[in-house]
Length: 182
Image (cartoon, rainbow, N blue to C red; front, side, top):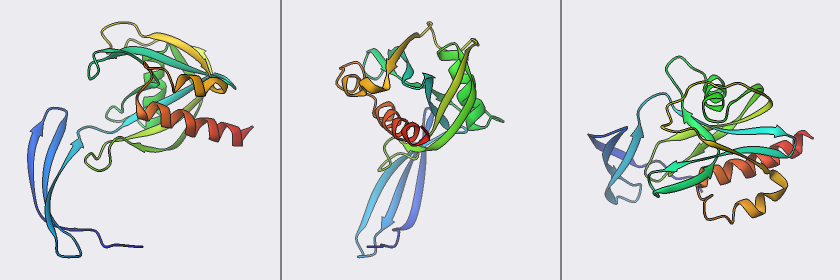
């Protein structure tokens, strides 16, 4: 079933740190009117990187997650800087966070964070043919790099310290894509 998008009768904007909060006055096709809020990211987008050390080994990073106030395992990720492509940002973030560069970078797709109230997307990149190279990053401490077998993804997703939905989705998507490449 195809529905027409709601009519936007008004938008009010407010500053919300790294985001812009918008309040939308909407009218749906059935005449119902509602106010919705959404967050728009500032900047040039973001990347989430699946760095493959070999055909079955992905590199994870352990870093402090302020939202949960604990250390979390996850994928390399970060913002795209002005003038960078997603692939350039992925390679830079990989060097900053994991200490590797990639000779092969493939953009797979966009992943949304919470599309019902947020416009933020991250471009999913698979990095292969890795080589050691470190760039200084913006993290307050060096991140621990942890190799993990994709064949043991079923164990990783049950760990309490691996909870970020984007990393979970990205690994499943990358595993399927890599399987089709083999």
